[in-house]
Length: 423
Image (cartoon, rainbow, N blue to C red):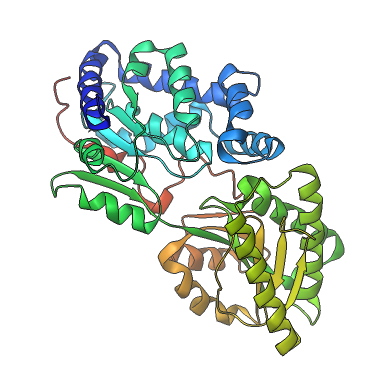
């Protein structure tokens, strides 16, 4: 049986299992999935221990970094938070204790990246809507989907039967056509990946796409003081270090607004020290030779700019483990990631609108520090520019479960509204 045939067979099995969900009430399904989340939150549970043990080898992250990332990331994802999400999005369509919004018979879910929390949620959400899930694991994380199914099976074997995991080669056109034949498709990935997926879909199919996004920090240097600076640098270093800066909520640049002469330099030095400390506690994972070469090239380019303008600064580890580049101008340059951060000084808040406009197409999260008493006005500007999350430094990697990635509703985007179809 080739991959396409295996996918077709899995879809048939999922459709049959989904038909048996009439045995479960909406409350039972939601409660069971909430129980699954609680198991992943529990550091002593089997699924959490296995995830901590197996993910480093699969993803390349260091074990300590995985442990810290899971602890922070799962912290706000309680069963109650999942129930609040469902009530917030589906309650207007509730009648007699059931949702009038419901999912398609089968939803294909293309996972991406190596951070497990988005994968866990992407598998659970269609099940809230009574949709079976056909899942293609990410190439750097084949571990999480299987552990999610195992955790579901411990809670409710029928729900577990409604999830099928189907790895296949990216360039297998026949398998792609089979995978994307379902009535609803959820895909996460680069803009190029999203475009490729869209070519397989017919106009009638529901699309839920999560494309390329970047995050930043916005820092008011007018508040810079020794105590505040030390705490701020430590929190921002965690935002960079967790998941080695490889997620859409990992910051690629810090914008430094205002401050006195020398403040950007002081901040850069403090951040470099915090990243060095983070490297000791949470080592960066292994990187491919081409990634290390790209980091070296970007460092060299910054050092050449420093020689020419006398203002650019490079503060970095002896190896490629972490890099801070204090720029002398505002254009956002390429981001090698893997704990490489650019600091971009802005003379005043007047430069914010232009800066945010250039980021708007791909802006996700913003760590915001300072800006009192005009903080609410700054937050409004950020959301108007397309940001989907604004938080305190150190919290970028801990989004609430109802965070609207790409500013889309999480459940209603995959739902059909109206009379509940026969299951």
